[in-house]
Length: 207
Image (cartoon, rainbow, N blue to C red):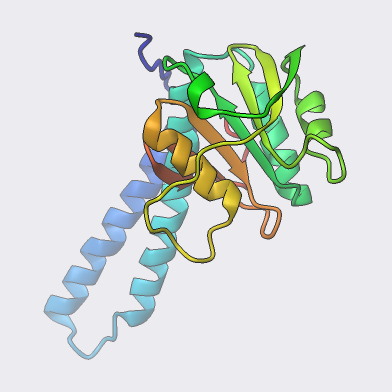
């Protein structure tokens, strides 16, 4: 089995800085609580809550690179594609096969057998394209098929979660695949891994 391979990167330093900031804010809140009981901490809690959301998004982008680096050399193409789709609010569902075979979990796909490029990925998920509404399958550096149907998760999830997100969770509950999702309603990019959905930092490329 291939192992995750993660190099030191600016994103890792950004993650460490953000965690230090949160730690300092918490320490400051503790000091305030001990020494100034008349100072309301509620506004500071709001700031800390927002900082946690940001650090979760940065961490998701960082670990996404770790999870993919051993299974495709076209990580930058995926990063650019997701960034552009997110900005345009073009919905997408992209499956990256890792160690587990996925044939028994994916159905009705149309074979493409094409080299992975961000321009081709964006064209496939352009609204109105006959292939845009299903899941795309990537193996290593190739797009294998499009318009695939994935198993939907049976676990109770948020009611506002759409079919793409439920399908991403459903496949990753059953296999070690990693699934990228872009919401056409909000443009929010996420990835599913081991049955859990993580938001991706939409402000910076995933590199």
